[in-house]
Amino acid sequence: MYHYFIFLIRCIQQKFKFFIWPLHKKAIFLEKNKLYFWAGILYMELKDYNNAAVCFEAAHAYLHLILVYQKLGLYSKAIELADEKKYYKKGALLCEKIQNYKKAAYFYAYFKPLYAARLYKNEHFFYEAAQCYLKVYQLSSALECFNNCQLPAQKEEGLKQLEEFAVVLYFTKHFEDAFKLFIKLGDYYSALECCKKLKLEVLTEQTYLLIAHAEAENKNYVLAAKYIEPFDKNKALIYYYLGQAKADAIRLLLEQKSYEKAFNLCIHHEDLDLAYKLANTYNIPITPSLCSG
Image (cartoon, rainbow, N blue to C red; front, side):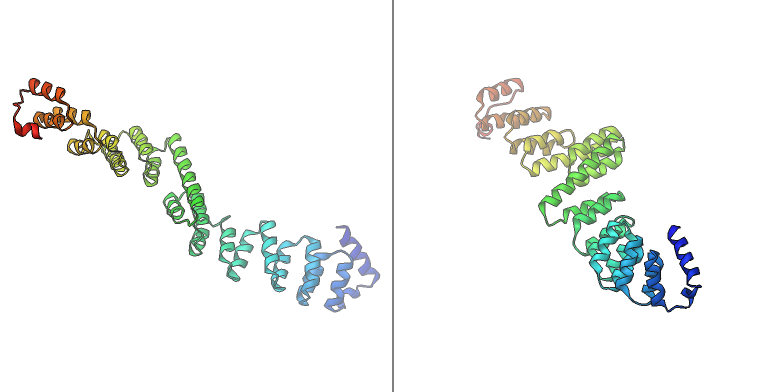
């Protein structure tokens, strides 16, 4: 208000000639009286953008200053100022205008994350896109982007974030959502814990089978057999064979009353004591064909 008061006094002293002066003289007069914003507006009308920039900066009129920087072709300075002063919408529109889509996505991430994610994906910045999806809890889309990261460190860090997200869901008793995320992450053991909380038998069985398949893929045949045995004893038996788990294979054969197969397995492993014990217990006739396996 002080500067306006001084301006008014000087206008009176000049007999209000200010109002009939040309724009350039008005702008200079306003600037000298430290009414920088209005001086800047007049300089803008005169297309004197350099002086307009000086005035808008002095007035802290940053939105107008961003516009002046654009007029001067100083796009980097305009973008930097938009970021510094948190004019994210202004920065986003400016970056799109000059086709700097990565930087535009950076600005959009603050107020329009899904659109930001789309821009990032189009430019193949998958880690940044995933972070935007996380903001709006689109976990499947985030996972897809993390898996597309070219840098192993980014992929690893992203998957770690999703794992932590899933753990939070579990401990906040969002068991179904946690289950879905653990399954997508391939963490079947954690998914199984969610199933136990949900008490859904079919889902639990399917998760046991997933664990068995995953362990078999990693050649952990004995562990695979343990998980699949309650649901598929024949497949469990195959896994016990592959894992050289003789004792478990014999136990399962005996449970299935396949006494001769159990006897032959003992012979195959040269465990004669157990073979003859089985023969005596289950009345298995010892013939050359049985002993040959």
